[in-house]
Length: 384
Image (cartoon, rainbow, N blue to C red; front, side, top):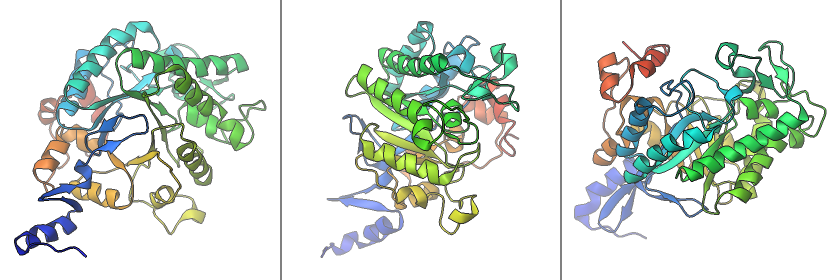
């Protein structure tokens, strides 16, 4: 039984409506409470910046001042975790123009400046490590892209067993570079049809060695990368994985199994499920009837923290998703439009976000360079 003084009753009703917790005389949203990871690090709130393609770095992968500005504005705007865009671990793994790199020691200085500024704003710094695989454009990498198996649609050649082992090592070394650069952790990009996802797919991965065939074999490279990072980075280095359950020849049942196995293994700090739309039903007919999100919130997770991304645009969206049982929410478009979304939320949980489409001048005021704005112009209804 809870007895509430009468003068607090109106605030308590507001608390229930907005999913706020009552701490003594203070009301606090779940979104504003801290979250501690197994490694010991804590994010100050439950807002994580999504790893967003922005095409702003130099052609050799070195961090540009434009990308530095874009990311550090979000750290200053109150995000509990500021995550980089996908940083490629091999030159041949570049997926888009102006992509941030982490495949060479020449990238460390720029990354170190970035992590230092993120930390100065009391935000956790996470570098997403990535390889595009068969989705690396020929006109960017200058040669045929690579894939677990030969893929005629993308003109990709199959990786040899030695190249698979080199790929695994380069992911691990990228994590080591990130730690040397002062990042609090890394996220392994295993989603959206990039190379780890290509290994996971039973349709794309047609290998007949230990990295192909059954699900255990197709997951092998991901687990080897995780184990290598755990063995060669500090014990308190934060490690996360991003997965997506649909598109790119993925099967929901297999991704659910992998997600639960990862979470209960104790090997990672967080799992980032990229759902495209957190409110949708699964595309596979046999799984319809429940939301796609619920398929993952029902999984066992032990001490691994679960978060989601996909069209979380308003404070009400974020609250609803927190109510579903996730540990944190990831903002992409909402963070592009308003760099200080978490601060605005803290000041007024019911604030009204800026609506799209927005002007190029407005996006420039939010820290986007001309390159990034041009990229965003390809998103229907986003830029005026």
